[in-house]
Image (cartoon, rainbow, N blue to C red):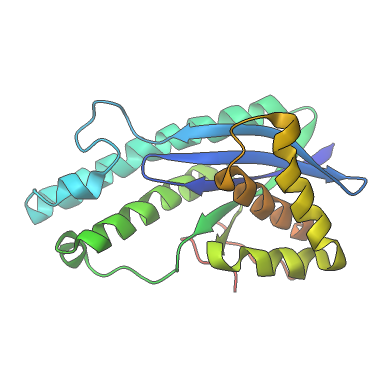
Length: 214
């Protein structure tokens, strides 16, 4: 059975997910989907930390836990549906998620006191939602800082890095929209995971919190 990997670039409440394979030096985009990771009409909508700012500390913690579980369930369904659609032809061997700077967040009270930290926390919230969804399916997750993705592509593919990047960029001509920076970065990250899957030096997070590949 052919191997495949998925990559995602998450935003507040949603993410761009792409499944890829590679054979005969060609990149194959198997699927691309939009993950919706929040319930329409739910308290807080797609910005749970913004809503939690107006709650008492204990209530805020409880609210965020409930939001996370609801979002994880939605992401799990999306990943599982994609895996099931590929089954019989492809075996998913790993997943990739694009990360921000990777700086640790402070306590919840400090987060809720800062508008910029609230935005940062929501970004981490939805990236972790995807990670935990993959863990539920026993699918290893590798995190890549967005600013470092090009370096990982070069380190993984060497002299073929430009060719791989160009194939990903050109895929939109055949696929049609949407093929934005979201899908391109998710596809490249997934290709790095796919290429490194059988290498002993591959670094990934598995059954644990996200940590970027150094």
